[in-house]
Amino acid sequence: MKVAVLQFPGSNCDQDALKSLREDVGVSAEYVWHDESSLNGFDAVFIPGGFTYGDYLRCGAIASRSAIMQEAIRFASEGRPVIGACNGFQILAESGLLPGALLRNKNQKFICEDVFLAAGTRRSMWTQGVDRVIRIPIAHGEGRYFIDEDGLKSIQDNEQIAFRYVNAQGSAIVEANVNGSLDNIAGVINKEGNVLGLMPHPERATKALLGGTDGMLIMNALTLVNA
Image (cartoon, rainbow, N blue to C red; front, side, top):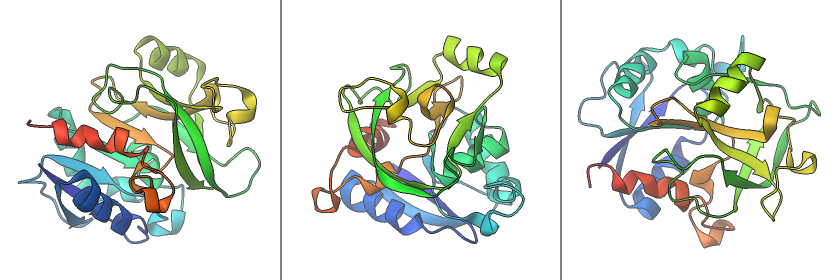
């Protein structure tokens, strides 16, 4: 298993991703610069967080047009695993690999705290191992998930809601919805289930030293690829 960690001007969670993949998940991982046009030799893609291109136009908008993202779209179309956290989720939405959009947080402020998540489906490789409420950090200013009414019904019917913000007991209540996301949505998958985007950072929750290891329940999905 070899994972490509994509790098763009403004990425700042790429080192977190690379370190957690190598040291905690135990897979091979290498950086791939945004100007590259090939993912040959890689089995999965991790799109990290940050502020690509300074968040100009919209978060992830410019990065989504990069050469490597065109290759990532092809890569994903073959059913290969792709995960994007925080800005990575925004890039996936802007590229059309995932439905919906990420808007400014409801309180108009940057939020940095731990949140509780519950899996909304079991049909994806990314959620099959998440059988309980997990605690993972967030750090974003534009993470409020939005989709139109027809789109919401579609992702509900297709079981594409990967994670919801919940309380410690697993209830998707208003108080647990830290950024005002529609239907408490914290992450979604594509129809095939191989592409995951989520605003929380699983790569920052893979060591007890850092406050918890619940992120491993998501990241460990990579160890099952080609197993």
